[in-house]
Image 1 (cartoon, chains in turn yellow, red):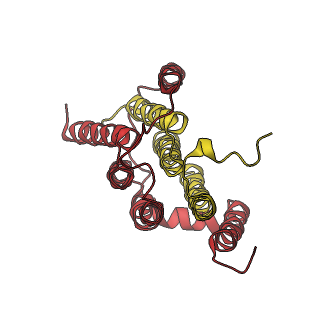
Image 2 (spheres, chains in turn red, cyan; image 1 turned 135 degrees about the vertical axis):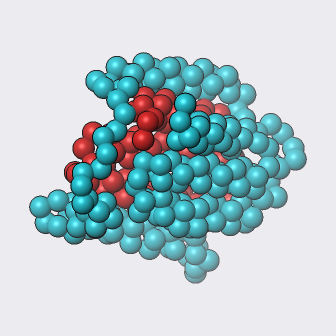
Length: 103
Length: 171
């Protein structure tokens, strides 16, 4: 174990930045959800790295990562259900075109 | 440079390259497959960090369930916008700028964390991380309440997803 903590932090910052770009730039709603997954994974890397480097006897970091897993699964299930439902009615997956609730 | 550092650098490069491909590649099915590669790289990182349970959960839940769900959704909606039109919004450069800004900001903040250049101590003698994690998740002094709340959230999300996506008799 000779890897400095900062390497993990820089890697997760990079992953988060790439995910943020994807969320803001992609048009396809499914691609936006894919990028959100990248950001959630960046957060999880940080949580687990801090757990390992600061206090491995306390399981707080890993427990929080497990809860992030559950929330990610819920988010994907609901998000993809919404996208498929919208696609069925309006034949589009472009986030800009789904503006029914805009006024 | 030790073997562990080389493995970390290779895995990190793999994660970043496949993440970039996820957000830039044109065919969404390929983007979903590149997401699988990135998630697998993260699982390798968990293994390096000695979080063995999380490494397995990452493969089983993220790759086995979430990525497959994405592939199903792409297949169900794929006729649209695969070959025609741009894949990114016209003002994508603002997004790239914002991403780079957040990236540099995060790196500056992270490197200011006290002890950012430390290397980890060995795990305490006799600590079984899987046992400790399982114990923490069901122990009333630890995280049983957040754990149960997460279960209820997952159940509610599944019921909601079935209702929203189902081909029911709703108008």
